[in-house]
Length: 416
Image 1 (cartoon, helix red, strand yellow):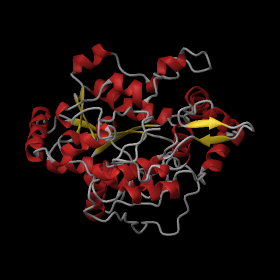
Image 2 (cartoon, one colour; image 1 turned 180 degrees about the vertical axis):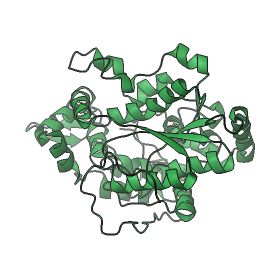
Image 3 (cartoon, rainbow, N blue to C red; image 1 turned 45 degrees about the horizontal axis):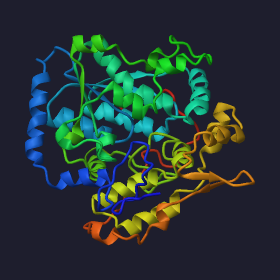
């Protein structure tokens, strides 16, 4: 397996990477733009877009902002509401796997920023039916989360005739360098299907004849292109106009608004994805079983590029977190009513053969790991020099002693 000489990414990254003659990946090369671009000029471009969509007072929302109880939501709403002076409608797809902390973060977000909010929640029994199909077909317990999160804002934009959707960072840009910041890539149906949804649109699942009809899957169906053209819907990414640094952004939101962080099961980042029982737990473990790397590799790579970790420190974190079986697996299996053997059988069918091989006794072996590429030729030449420490804060809980012992589907959504 080829690994980037600067960060930790392997060549089988599912979003696709390329390597240059120095062995440095496309994600690292595009990341260099963060220290070269004129961000004041780029922010001025964002302000012009905002100005084009700002409505007169009393004429409804200027834009739609997808939010959750984590993952840069506070920072995005802060920029949209307090800096760009837009009136956003906040929307979210209910992922079902919500933590109490995530629900609390979301309630404070809505209250502190005084924004209207709309949420789509589905019957948990239906979500379990979808999970059984997507686990078999693509080895994913998260397809419904990705599909719902990426389409509900678009459906709302079309239905309410609000043309502008504002997202945070674009993974294809920030992780793997699929685009330059200068491309100003926007939301597309094509990228969503090929990467977010692993090639499976809602209508593809309906066509399988496995008990999910087109009507059942309407909450995940992308609006017709003509419908979007009539309204002029476009989705922009703040990461094209702001030097994106999730760690610093979260720390600013902790200081300004009391955003709560939480220890994660399979990574050192205590800021992102604290709203979900499984994103950095079982969902990430499944990613590891499929591709041979997990969220800790994503987070360590990000911090290496931002010069807060050395490559060696990042590899040390991968050794600590990557292979550990997550403690939340039993929780999910009990909710689904599914034996562990059935879950692993589904995932094994989707293991990347370039990352994994099966032994004679049926056991799986990782063919390679970045931990074996500590001193590869070219690493020293590609190295970025560390300039800052990498310490993630664990904030005090607003509910000390409260156990995270169940999913919270619905709860009080504001703070008195």
